Image (tube, rainbow, N blue to C red; front, top):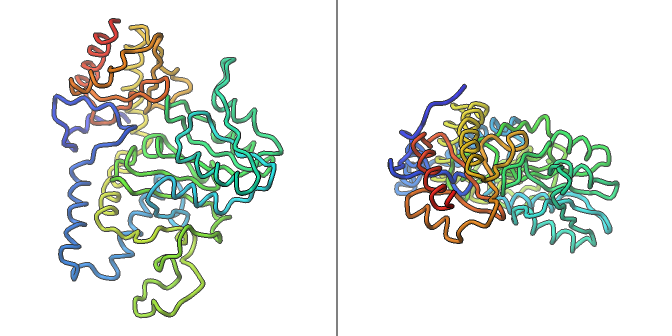
Length: 381
């Protein structure tokens, strides 16, 4: 189903063409209202009961689980991608001489923890280059997996240009040699369908402030049940068994909350953040991720056709995500191209060698037409 324009849900002026969701999504009115209501609960703390600490957390966890296509007990509430990746490094086995596979120009939060782990264990981080023979990122990963591969750390799609990886094929290859699969889904979850039950990552993390349409400093970590007995990043009171009973908090216990809840961050029950997260995820699920993807495919396909006609090189539709358009330039664009566009209230971004054009359901036909007109003028195409 193609979803009609949803600009009325956002505070976006008519003269603003925001095609930069991959940078940060705008907050919907309902999300802002939910965050304000959560903040108000701290104004009058006697209205915020001990039960509220848990009810708001479990609501957000349950909604996130639906987006991941898994059970709520497999989801931890955290604050960032780096927190989730570090949790993975704390629990995955690797020995001296083994390798961790990553992609060239991968987002740094999914790089630095692996470098540290490799240095600790005498292992190596192997950075994969893009194939020069017409291959894909999937080809690069599948061709690099050997008996020496311990961990594959990647994403559902490359954040610079939107090329999708075949995660089912990667998972199957990893299974053959017993390697772990760790995913950063921040640039895809909420706009590109993902099924944790099918892909079976060992760990998968996604920050909510991009395609899940939520506030900053909020994220979720999927943990495969095989790692439910692992070591959490921190030892906070809420991730311990029985923490719902405030009168027994000093009856210290060694046991944790069930499932992935042991990996929850401290002070997870932030009513402003989780209220906003829940409001955003409720809307995303109401739209339906599959419907979002198909609706954004229409927009990015249209833009790709227009950009191709002026001599630019958009990522091929067959290998890119429907919500993400990476565009290569035949020659270097003006250094101030982003500033020029921003001065005209048109917003995209450049990452590496690609211009990222990432609309959402609030982008109108007029927004896209104005972007095409102005990028053509600035490039002299």
